[in-house]
Image (tube, rainbow, N blue to C red; front, side, top):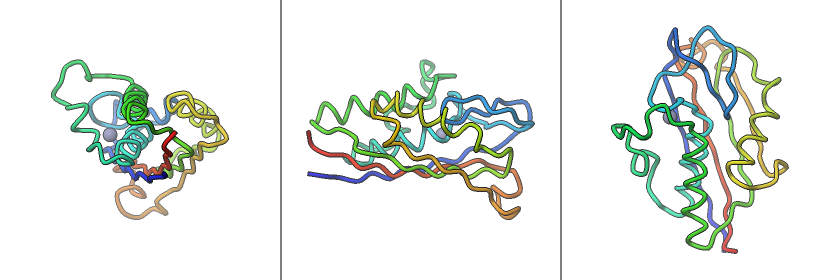
Length: 158
Ligand SMILES: [Zn+2]
């Protein structure tokens, strides 16, 4: 039995905040605004894992008004989502993610992000795909007002 999950996330880019993506601190003049460490890659991944078994969304499981999630490292959300699907007898086969960010270029950091996400998902790094796209200078991404990510995950009953 296979199931599929889809997740997205978007955060505003602002001055004076760190830019954390896939557990990697990216050198940038703009960072992601929000609760926790505002890691859109980890948020989209956790959302996709929850979605695979119709377990609701990130906000349901990690309310952003709860103090214990303030400045939380977002890989925790992914790890918790994995525990939830394992409890139902499922494991993750693979995940594919697209990050949308105008700059800086993320290519030098992709493999470290893949390793971090693979560790959080407890799957081999070969089963973790991360791609980065710019916004071609248009819309919120291209105008450097936001960073976003989309994730799709395949899970299987063990
Ligand atoms: Zn988020």
